[in-house]
Image (cartoon, rainbow, N blue to C red; front, side, top):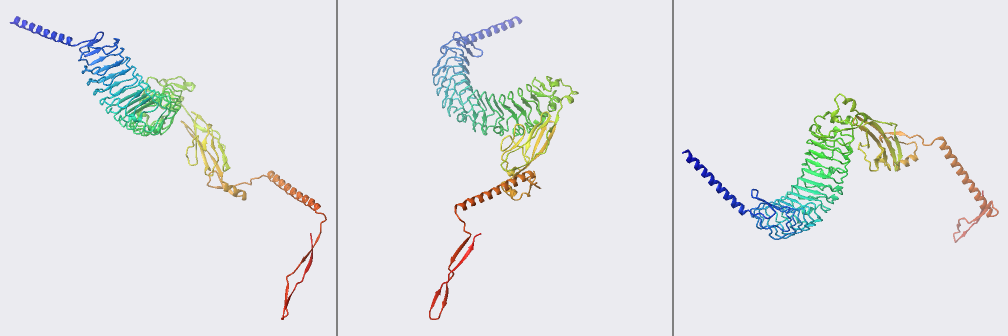
Length: 607
């Protein structure tokens, strides 16, 4: 019984092996593989890479799903070139010498998901080339010589999600080139000859979530550059050395979570274009010549978590720079020119997890004490900060300091105004006035000037602060009168000094001349003080002498003139006789009348 069962078991095994062998033989018979190609029936792949084929080889299995034709010498693709490969998922034609693809070349590949035609010699893609690729997800046409993207080039690719179109010679993208790409999520346009953002073409991509521009000839981002891209979440603009400005509304309409503008030529932080990006979490402005991060200018970026500004020549991060950023956890400002980073720059250092300040000339004083205290908890990215100054700690790594030596090393000296000599100036309208202010302290204090209304004064305008921290009031006006204040401050404290300015208007000048004893307002313009007599004794004596000499000279000239005039007229008469006729007297004799006129004469003596 046992032997019969064993025999039956062996017979069953033999039958199974025979059936399996027949199936394998049948499969191998139906799976054809061109000469030089490597085929795999298990993954349904045909790999014909580096076979030097001048055309697409014949005899490809209709069951093939992966076809690799890279590094051949294929020059053209004819219409319906792959129509028999209906099961194909992935087709790679990269690294050939393709310069022509006929319309409907890929017709029949209704299951194709990935198409790569990178690193060829295509100069133009005719309309209709991608007909029939209804399920295509990825298209790579990068590193060709494409000059123009024509209207409706991609209209049949309704399922396409990603286009790699970088490193072409693109000079123009037609306004309707992207028509039909309703599912496109990612577009890469790198290393092209575009000098402006193809705004109208991008407006067709309402579903786009990621956009990348690299190595373009952009000089500015104008207003509404990315309108209609309300779903865009990540924008990368990099390696555009001529990009110097972003228009105020250049990013208007976007709801970005990630923004990268690096390796460009931005000299200032783009505060205004950024202010509406309330969903922004990641911001990278590295390798731009940005020198300052001002206080309270980023507070509207409520969700910002990371800021990268590497290698930007950054000189100062002002107190309050990150105020309002409650989720801020990573700051990377390595490779800049920062001497310090004050705790007051942050909304809360308790949320800070990563701080990269290596590669900066750090002055280790009281301003950096907060970083040293947190040196065991902060992540320095594997590159802990190193002191550059003062001499006693130069070259020391933050983690090497012990708690006991910190109070004696990380110290500061409060700011102090040096020259406190009173400066009260009274001038006529139109004059220029200069006020001086200097201060000392460790670290070196910053100096600002406040107007009589306590408004900080800038280095520009008619009333401005000079580079040497002096205050210049040019062409002084009456309304400039008042008390100006110089404020010196550093991490250890502040000091201030007030100066006064009184400006006389033209009407006040006239009243002063008529009434020299009138009083005039003091430095603050709210009270009056008597003006001292404006001339001293010496000045008065000189004035009187000059006036007397002028009078005597005038009299002498008059007498000389009269003398010569009289000599020219001959003998002078001292008397004059004048005849005159008085009014007539009318007499009446009753019967008639007559007039009687009496004449007269008198003599007048001339004196």
